[in-house]
Length: 484
Image (spheres, rainbow, N blue to C red):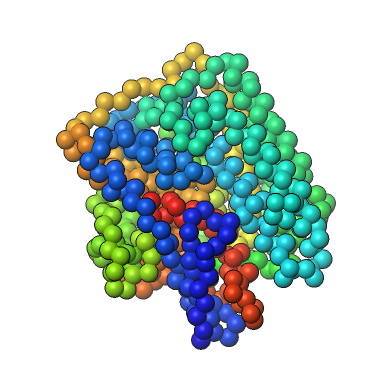
């Protein structure tokens, strides 16, 4: 058995290192290291609760809106304030704007360029892949960057700026949207729709979103196999058998995405269980963080509302700064695939029923989510009433607790807040990549990525195995959010 340390990874947000034990040309075991400690959680202790709205978004520049939403919801829960419908719609629009931009960046800039590597030069699709996705030069990748830039103009109108907007508040949105602005926003959404339908999908969003199974997807692909980048990805995935790489843990967690004024979610949450082929409710009391193998004080698994973040850089047996979140003691995966499974999207459920969560199904779920969410944004824009309030002020008690849950692009994000004597007593964050890239727990059970890497092929002479890169990127990690 040989040992290989892979990292730092390029085209990954933050620092990541993976230690691989290799036997007979395959990964026998893996340990995932988040090597960067930043200390946002202890930084918040002793501050005024509203300071979290300024500090927490700066955990990350590419998913700052998600952190803002979770922080605002934690304070809203502690204060009892309920945002008005306009505030709910504008918050959802900002969150969806960021999430879809992240999905676009992942597909065009992080994931697909790996298929333009020389190792695939003999594949029949290689030259077309280079034309579309070569790093810094691919025609479609460059078009996606331009489309993403124009897409983020929504954030200027809705939130004043991006990243780190301060308009997301516990009581809604601090910036009202005027009637004329709503028309301009809709024009931007339609412009992004045009890019997606012409370049990414080669079909209408509604056509993609309503594909009801693998058979329907195969028929759709066969009708015009070279049209749109989703079809090209499917061609690559079929040729390389990407469904055989990166098998997930069989449990997928979603808190529910895009909560509406009536309390329902556009994408309902839950825990998808492969073994039961069904969605179960989330038992929020069953969430624990295990620090056995983290460079952090404490070994006993704690609920986030009781958690603490105290560095212990020389801790015996530790190999990462990331804790190991578990749900009822079990490993879960989170992300777009969890949202699509929990909300009942037929194609993704069929894909997972056939081959499980894997490299192919994770990427497919992100693209299907894009096709589903953008039409929702058109409806939310139409539902805004410019003359109605966008914000309700909150009154936070001196002693209170609150929980803020949302769905970032990469999955389930939770903030747990406790306030004593008007100051933050404890603030704990469990980010999506904390779930997906967790280390082993006290029982020695590997995290979702660690287990997914087992069995991955390693070619002779590879120091950064391409299959390992496909698996890692299929989870779309955000390492700076992992240890805050």
